Image (tube, one colour):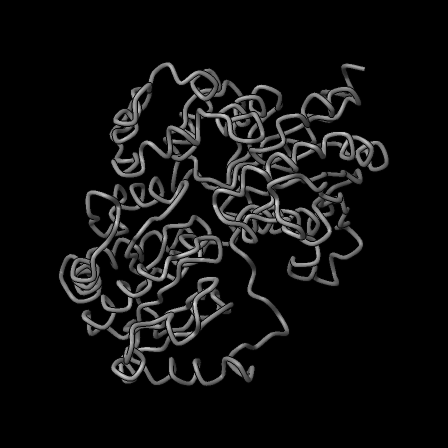
Length: 468
């Protein structure tokens, strides 16, 4: 498709919820003839899924070693390796990559650099060498819109108290439910506007990147978030390009159903009724405390709903203590619990899966809606609460009511599961999710967004050439 050998460099934040969408975009660009340099730290590059052999000559993985600093545990190069309070030191180490990145840039000069929310120092470096930068957001357009303009991100003058964060912001010029829960509002305000150990707040990072970039790319589509996409274009005063949802292509050559570690689970799924099983999973990033694991276990048992629970074992907890005493024997005819990694996309594609009880992470939302599943939402951290409100606004998700302190209780979770899976209200959610599935599973539609992105960078290069 591309006549010139365009070269795009990508540099995601050191979290797999960011690196994987950047990698997915890299693969889609490479498949269309764009050369991609994917920059990250050595350990993270080793943990990425393998690049398809057909794209190996167009995707180059470039290492940039992470420096050691106080407060950051040894050999920890991604958020998944850390406790929440340690992530600020990862940002501090990340910021020390400015000089090594500049050296790497000089050796591999691209036409465009796609950057995440964190490396606010890249636009200035890139400008020295005449290289354009673009901000690629792995967050929803509604999350970016909620955070506000660069001025608001830096100064926070329109929202000065936590209670301001529990309502849609004043710059929303349409009906919206997107806002944080009262128990999370102070955390959101602090994370956005208060500098951490790196000396920079998250809001300041995003603001500096938006101001230094030529345009913004967002992992979404007009068919799902058009009003929010249009709003952030107004807020940022920059072109905003939806890139599509970047749903991972099904892996070829792997059949987890026949893998020795998963064959018994897929055989169990094969025996269940169509759309009857609730998939339960809270990702690899959220470290669910054992108290919450027990509460969730009791909720699943009380719901009497068939389930498959993919569970991450908490650090420092013995295996026999992870779940309530006797839980596995009591639910032996109701569900399965699997500890550790799981082939999530293959599980969600199974015809017996009908609902998802999860943390409202955007990546899992995309996968779940691609199969039209009912969504039961217990958001935990970061943008997850905003995502949940967006799904409730669109009538495709049910958010589990929480206690005043943000905790959840087994009875209410169990009631939510039954409501979504077994009532007329749940049937409305299923019907609405089936409509949205047509958007999310339309690969031709989302591929067209990648084509539009490529046309945009071609026009940029043409304009740049005319200016010389």
